[in-house]
Length: 94
Image 1 (spheres, rainbow, N blue to C red):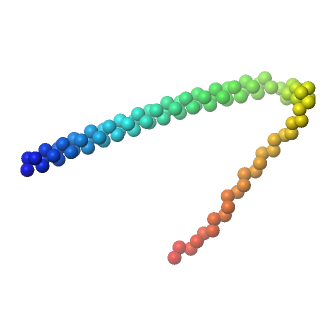
Image 2 (cartoon, rainbow, N blue to C red):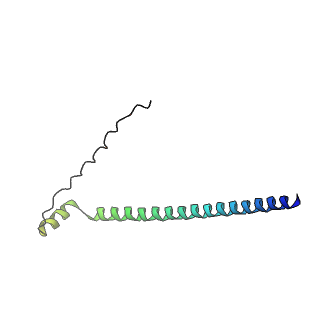
Image 3 (tube, rainbow, N blue to C red):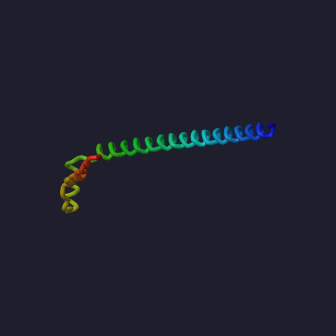
């Protein structure tokens, strides 16, 4: 009887320790994900800042003159329409 109690107690302690380890790993993973998100936000803000700086230094008239001087044949970009998803036939479930 005593040996069964010891085995159950050891098993419960082992399960508890494993659960604590899994929780710790989950917290570490969440922390790493948060750090990555912070880095992604910083990179996105830096990209936006660079886009604003480029846009502020690019005047349409100056750009047209540079294109004409370089004799480039540039055409406007037309966005391609996104095709609609195919229709799904609904089936009667009987």
